[in-house]
Length: 312
Image (cartoon, rainbow, N blue to C red; front, side, top):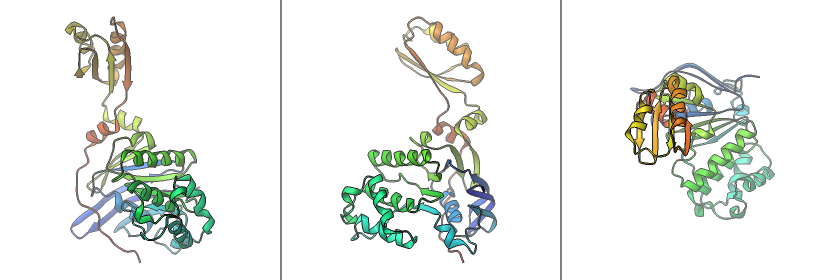
């Protein structure tokens, strides 16, 4: 079974802008891969290459074992699902009509739209014109069209952009369901808050380059950021805090009732022993580096990198 997506040493330039500069990356079967970076980092260009909407200047793209710009492009695209960053539908059509239209484009029977309307919570609004849908409803409709035909590979470009908290939660809930079903998903985002629980691996992109990739545990080890330890208790006594600092901890936040520490991995057990020996400790929580901390550490830079280009 081929790797669903394999990118090798990709270069892509739009005029004077180097959109991609030697990117090599793969998406494994059944995983959710997060492409993370600022706007203009190159995330959308990667998705366009995977979809066969543009060609690399050099390098190799393989999608489900095929060249996305090759002779079998029509057959290949039937196996792909795509949710663009900006979802636009004909406002006069109903949600049901929109899905049936896209099903027809994919050569899928019109009955395929009904389970998706139910699954994405749109059944009650299916016969209303799309122009009356909220942003969250339009995003759910966009996700429904991407899921038509049960694609082998799903590409989601900034799926939570512009959504309110409830709609964002709905998108992540759907993403979790796709993970449970074993779908392969490439997800791009410049919004890090809340995403780390919903991806298997992260690829951090900056200025058209792949800066780092791996699961959060791997990235945490590579960054050497240690852990965050939070301890609830009585921290009014300076001597108590000093005992923890002596073991290698750095105080990040402190109040009379809570202490938050940054602790190198090698000092974690020593610090925990000291904390657990302190009278009046109510609770202790240990957290690995957050995605935001890892993102800041590996330091992507910004560069406007996206521009349209059609494939032959």
